[in-house]
Length: 415
Image: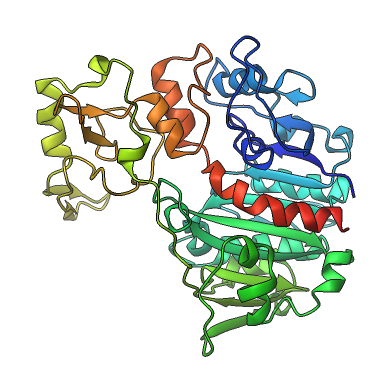
């Protein structure tokens, strides 16, 4: 089977960087030097909250403008999307509750603007053989008032579309990368595929420990007495009924076939991670990134412990508390999870003691790119400094995709 790909919610091209093992771009043309044979036949990137589409501009600078859409994915005609073997995308974690349509013919209708439904509609329209998705790990526990409901609805929706699914929560630093970033990766395949016929017992712990895509790419500890949980999603008539009453504790590893779920808590076979010291730039003048005295004082407050009185809507007073955290990041450790607020005076921003000057500073945009395994200056395409940090906080660790790629390639080529 040909390795054709579409990338939804493409951002600055993280999945493409990972699958095609990109480590540099041509300094003259700006185009990425793609080392793999994955053919990206279409991509969509649209940011509703900004007038200037910096992510789209970065993507097209690195990959060209052919077959790249800058329209709201809701407005895209799914039937006009090119045929493809693999759909990839990192999508927002939102409320996935559903309600019946007025006609009651379709049965369910996702909330308007919830982007998972555009993935589902694309899979349905194009009968995509395989997909690989990424999301924040809290998806498995969302919402707080009904733990597991949103992920359960997603799995039931994908089951109804004819897919088997495997998921794994991965901390990138456990597999040698430079950031302690936990994300859930979701791999799906058509239940009438050759891959499905080769692995008929995907609900078994053995499959999840040794044979699955994630087990072969990102090994876990082999344990004999695993405590696993199961549930049959088919006991619910549809996802509308699940919205009202479904709860389940999805662990960090699991599969679903024909609505039957197996899940358990796995432990990674850990590798030595890249440290912050290893990602530091050694040449560039860092003067612009040193903290001012005013910024230092603000960070002392933001990263210090605090107990702040607040008032609930009913007038009840309570205290919001935060514990103290280190003012600067340990250069002997991998970086903390990078957020879209990186580079601002925010509690979550990385601060380091610059080895050359012994002064406190922000990390540079290139150091932020290295935390996500992007080539240096990938986002240096004319966008403001603040947006370069935002793009990296919103991206994925491409090194994890590079780890998954060889086995994923085998699966699709064998199909």
